[in-house]
Length: 286
Image 1: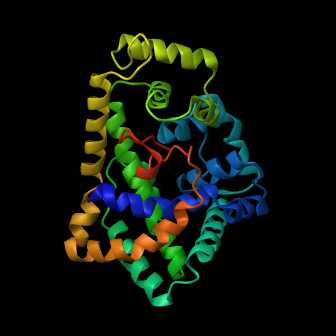
Image 2: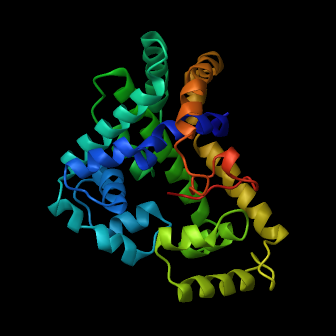
């Protein structure tokens, strides 16, 4: 159930990363360039944090890539301005995708998703906690998006915790994933790792039994990563148990047409790991 619900609220959240209106909203407050908006918008609930904090929380990025954005982005826009920009852009994007749906549909979806987000266990989940603590949105689409953001980061925190138990370094996780069903050409520059770091990571993956000498994923690695996904689902299941089977089923019905529209803006190579984008049943943080 937790994974099924994730496939519905994740696309709602993802408009903030991929919709032109979301990028325009960040640019309007001085955050020009995709990565300035990304790092400022996603880190803003934490306050004016520096690069090491975000590197640790986001997990999969090379430290120098994060350091190029933080803390310098806070000279362009305050966290409060970044928060307003990300919500404005997300709401405008969702308005474009949901204008044909009745207002009552959006209100009910927002109320149910917001209730689920209000049931997250924030212990040990920093990004989930700071998003959960943000003020409630004023309008249904704002409430819907903020609830999706809270649930998304809550699940992501649990996923990172599960990844840490594997003993893999962030670059090793990304490199392994790209030997499964993703593109190194896209993900290496998108996460900021150098050729030398990437090659060294693959060598370590061979030594650790995650890749064969021919750089193919091993059965051990596939099974271990599947256990990471299972742990991620278990850690994210609390809100849906609290909401109950009947209301969760109703929320699925309400979110399905919204998520279907939002998926159209997500590039196929995006590292989100939604089922339509993957073949190995694994996700990647961030």
